[in-house]
Image (cartoon, rainbow, N blue to C red; front, side, top):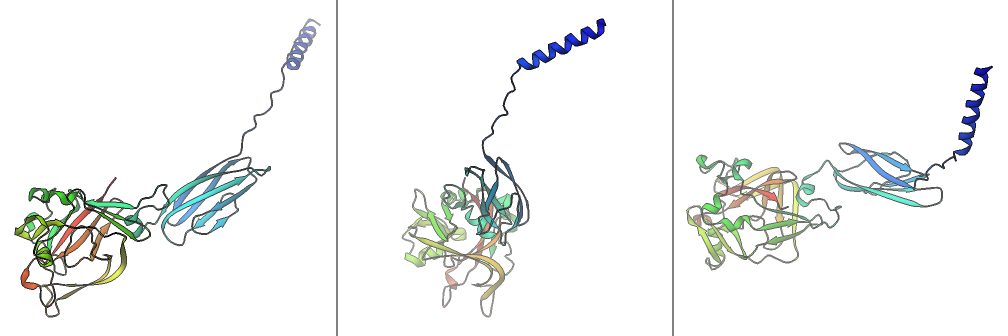
Length: 316
């Protein structure tokens, strides 16, 4: 009986305590949405981490949409895309989240950067001083670009500064996704180029420094306003060369090239302003820029004698 009375009293106390404790309401979490995603080549699996949502609307940034909660989308081409999720709750309230994607990037993407980024201002490049790491060298303008001097292949780092042409590392070249192009010659108002070209152009009147041994110089140049560039992939590039008798024309098939409007160019100004892209990544590109370094091969067609194989780095 004593045990029964004890249990009864304990149960009464528990009942009293539970009656005194007010039941707390569950918190009311607001509508929210976060995008998770995984990438496989050009296929993206999207996951909508949402709370209180009853409908989902996806804009994949390529003109395609979906109302699935967790869609899988295959982009037809690589590039930069901005995917947007808009989630809606039962009361009609909405919230959104955005993710920037870089898929199977191509040459134009590496060259011009991500146009979906806020404040996009193109992608700016300049000649790098780090020649040895990139394998830069001075070549003959032949079909396989043999080295002019194997002992200087690759070029020493900052080599142009050692011959009085250090300002060439300052000039900047900006490419935009819409095809526009800007060239900044910095404080000296001059650019890197071929000595023979400048002498033919205006008898060398604009030259401010030179290195005659290999026909290089820095000369005054005014960049063109509203300039444009043309990127051609899988191009057939025909180049005049002293190393290609009897036609004196070299043909490079299946290459990527850059050409420019008006008098514009990148890196090196000479008779041949169209350049070949040897390799490119998100942070570095190496170009083949041709040069006519001998006054003996200017008529009837200007023939290239050399090629500068130089690398560019992204300006942060």
